[in-house]
Image (cartoon, rainbow, N blue to C red; front, side, top):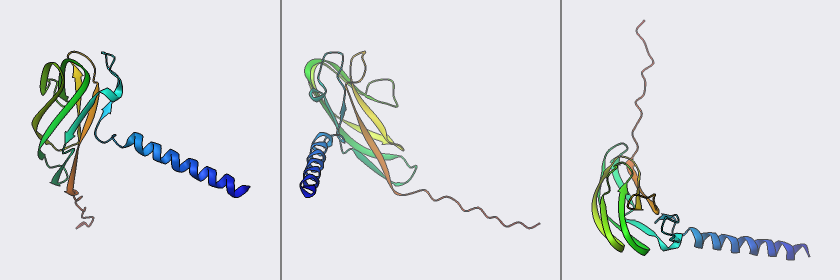
Length: 146
């Protein structure tokens, strides 16, 4: 009896883990919210390829040519924004999808968002900045002459 209960519990945990893996498998590509036009979260997609930029040393500016693509269920006027700039990077009129290339330059990870003109973000996706070598902290010399 006890072994059967343990087996059911383990099976239940495996099923939950598999379901969670399915749900979160696309989390690195985009984060979507329902927007002002009634779009369901699965109907809005924003992605960046590549989604990571690698600099040689920590704190250096990372340079990467990225491709930003998006799609929605409803045609409209949409813009892609970079969180560090108030102006949109690119806008489209009366369309459900878009694609453009962007010369990314940043020393830190940032987020890009897709917004209908004059509204809040429908989708947000990160661009991660990593580095090969961490910045070394200088050792303090603790000796004194006097």
